[in-house]
Length: 436
Image (cartoon, rainbow, N blue to C red; front, side):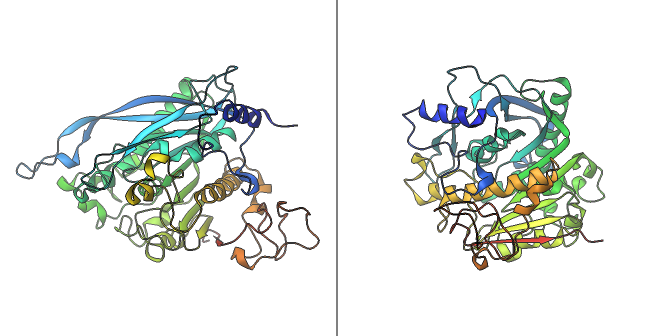
């Protein structure tokens, strides 16, 4: 019998014929098994949280040697398992991203399955903090937020208000702000869950997950225990205001988020600008899933993504590799308005990989990882421990499921568990246990 969440998602899609494409959170027909939506319908709420007396590092006054303090407002989206009222309409997300200079920002919309301010489902669902990339937008990661909420997670995602991506002088802004932004949002979400705030009443902060893409990956790794190197990137921030957050600094402990049960870093930044030094990532002890393309020209693979996996020696960790994949593996597929210029499209699309496949593979792998390590469903480990590291080396099991597109049951030398026949290609999945 179809599950209620799937029925509701199907109703929303069919009831909205004007949409040119399905919501990114709904996987395609060739998606691996665990990418599919979960049993819950999804609600979404928008809140604004304000951090008092925060240093505005981009307004640094060199003559005076001072950094002004401001009240920093963050717009935050909260996705959660919900019970929408009959005939509710799904949300359409709207935002804008920087265009190639000197063009103005380009607006875009994304269809969703969530219903705004829908009544929430009672329960105790793991709390996920989701951080987008440098210059990115929360709306650009609905592929993951809605998908996880349908599976029984409460997802909280701030819009980080980064400076224009095309202005290299703005880099100290997200470098400084990502870790404290994420820590602040996690604390606010924790307090909201305790107080029974709308959208957060069913969140369980004792099971917290940190997920970040690109600059967001740098942020979540830092807040998961990767100590900032006092001789590294903190010195790029003017006025010395970031130095107290480095290892041994007076504010370093403020970045430690409690009860982190798992971390997902998608194409994480950090290594290339020496955020943590050689040893800082050893402070990450929660189970870790790193996802990256081995042709990532933004943060680098051999010198950027792979070292995160290698240096987090005290974490039970996985590395999912998209062979020939680039950096744009953490966003939705490009909306129609972002397909008129290469700069705009490159926010979203990989030059090699079909993006709906990228999202589905990530949804599948992240679901297996979080269900196993956060919800304690050890049966999901079979999806994370294929007999072959290189997906191309696996064979369809004999005898195996029949039909044109069955899911693989996995097994010795077999196609990775949960992938449709002939659709587990171009991937690697590595695993290392924590050091003794």
